[in-house]
Structure formats: structure tokens, C-alpha cells
Image (cartoon, rainbow, N blue to C red):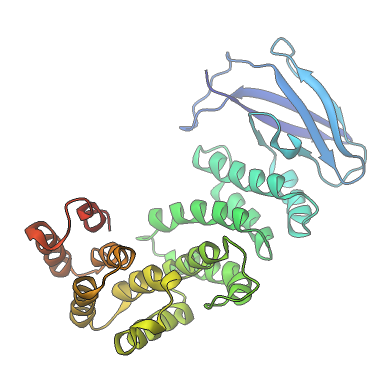
Length: 308
């Protein structure tokens, strides 16, 4: 059971892979072996198929010539992770940034390096440095993968003294894509653009980006006076950001309760429930829970308050 992590090394023009069972806790299992379909791509020769690397073979040799980089498991056709030494990970930043690799390969590299970092097989600093290559990435799927991985470290590192520096890095990394998406929907938006926009705003808010926090609060206050001014696509994220950052939490809490009690739309009510537990104040969290269990919320929706 399980699947392998294929670790490659490069000596001149020869890339040599070795395999071992991948274990998320970083422990090793040198016994388990698989028949692994080996494909790789380089800028000089494109995708090449090296055939099946059988479990009985200790290793194989792949000739990549003078190629400046190589991506093993082209198009992620095999069910295995690939690890590279630091210099080869660094070399792969160029084709990622230039979009010379297709979306599947860019996502798989990002997924692999962060999974390997959490397993202790790659330095976390190497994974974060590799993520710099995605600053001008156009695809939502790739940003979603990046956000899910960086969110792990936002939770993990939030009490560290250097956490503000990590937040500043995320602000810088997401600046260009936020500028492209903007806050407001456009006629050229695609089906998933609203999700894309919310995810990017959420990451910048988690990184305490001052412009994003200020804009969310401005839109919240505008909606107090004119509820229709707040787009339904942005309602949940604006509520979530504002309640965590506001200097007037009691007023925000009262407004959200009023929205819940006066709205005729279930979706809007759920947006409120998803925000009520996000106030930093323990007192307001307690009020939200007491209100919910006292009958203020339908039984099938009460999990939204507890989950927030």
C-alpha cells in the first residue's frame, strides 16, 4: 500500500532516480518498491517516456543532455511524488515563472514541494523560496494550491516573533494577482473568478494586508447604510475580515444579528453565521454561541456558528 517518492540526483547530463515509500511523518521504508512509469520533460527535448522502472531495478539513468532543468513525471501521469536537490528545485523556478510548464506540472511541483516540506524531506525555506516563482501565475487552480499550503504555515507560525515578516512575504506574493482581479466583478470574469477573488482577498487579509483590511471595513460600513451596495459574492469575506479587525466589535455584532433576523435569503443568513464566531473577543464568541443554541438559529444551520 501507499506510493513512492522518487528522489532524483543529477551528475552532468545523467539524472538518476531512487525510490522509497512516502510517509508523511518523514520516516523511511526502504523495503517497499513499485513499478514506476517514468516520464520526464526538458526544454530541449520535450516530454520523453523512459518506460517502466521495475521494482527489481535499484535505479535507472535518464540522459537529459545539457538541459538547464528537468521535470520528472511529466503531466503527473504517474502516481508518485518527485523530490529534487535544492539546485534542481531552484532551476525549476524559471520554467514555472515563464509558464513554460503546463498548468498540471506547475500545480504538481507546488503540491510536491510543500508535501515534502511537511514530511521533513525538503526545507520549508526551500518550499517558500520556490513559491516566489508563482507571483505572476494566471491560473486559479495553481493559486488555490498555493493558498492551501501557505495557510498551513499562517496557522502554524502565528505566534512566532518573525510572523510579521512571513505575512509581508505573502502580501508581496499576492500583490500582482490582487491588482489584476480587483475587488469588483467584471464582464470578462470567468465562472470561477469570484472564487479566485475571494481566495486571494482571504489570503491577503490573513497576512494583515492594510489595503485589503481597510477596503473590507469600508465595504462593511457602506453596507450598513446601503445593504445592496455589498455584492453577494463578497459578503462572506467582507464580514469575516471586518469582524476580526474592527475597533467597534459590539456594533458589528449587532449589525450582523440584525442582518440575520431581517434577511429573507438563506445564503445571506449563512454568511452571517460564518462570521459570528470570528470576533477575537471571547465574550462575543460566547454571545454568539448562546444566541444560537437558545433558538436563534435553525438546528440544521447551527454548525455554521460552531464552525466559525
